[in-house]
Image (cartoon, rainbow, N blue to C red):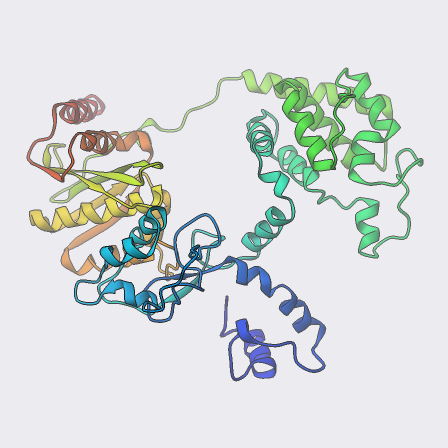
Length: 477
């Protein structure tokens, strides 16, 4: 969304000068471009949601604003007209949710999701965000993904999930995996697909000259393809004839073993890229040699990256390094923050665990833990700190110079607002292996119902890991 670009300003001045894009009409004598843009507006309408700021712009009953997998709207049988805007559910003095009112208006699950929405004391304006991307901003990629999943609900079932898990785990070049991904979605420029776009007149299969070139013909029904598959003894299953090409290919891969899937993927890839210069014997020899070469390469020892990147590193000078992590229970929507602060010698300066209720997802749990780490540092009087965590999403959002529009933007804004309180404050992403002490702290927190703090010590299980980090440093030195 770039409302200030030249194209957007021209469209606005011509078609919706007195309103906004979401309320604009087609108008008289619209251009092809404007007609096309407006024809796709429903995608935005279905994927946009409100991020709660002050709540004054959001209608409780009609707008999408709660954190849930569905459309984000309140599902209820009765509407209480005493409460219209989301602002009516917020205590303006404490900037907290009015839990008693929310509990009386909504069922337990909806109440939990509403209470999970973070609020900011500065009460910024409400903002529309795109739910299809974790940045909150619309992208062509995320819009396209939403269209595909909406038009192909069969690709969201368990069989589809197993197929893609199996596909990306195959020990074959990435270009072949990507090709199979295009194949299952029918994204290849076959003769039929090109003809639909009026880019070619003929739809005859160039391989066998005996049928219309669709994906299911070229890769399943074509006599040449059948010869290839039979020649390497990986013929298709006769009892698998799904209602659509996608269903068929997904099921075909799921019922085959890994080696067969690898060979068939190479076969499909080679047929496509050689369909204009096909020689049966040459192709059979190539495919067998190609798979054999991949098998040999797979057995070669791989060089590991520097192990130092997977170990916790001591801070330098007067900097206190604070590591955070979070455990999250998807069923109870409860998370535990685990935080530990250590000095340049690796000694524990402070540690804490803190439970949180009504947490919608793991990313929010990690953001809460990061904010808790800074709160602990401020309370301890630390002035130079380095905050580390294994949540790449949270760390990237904090370090980004762009405005964050995601569902955790209020937490990110709070974290960024703490920079003036420290002489040195930095945020670094580290691998999970290097964050095992903070992870143990989060696990330790499951034993306590309330926040728990330690000064210059930690629980025995955590102390053992701390001592291990110190010994590893001594061994490296």
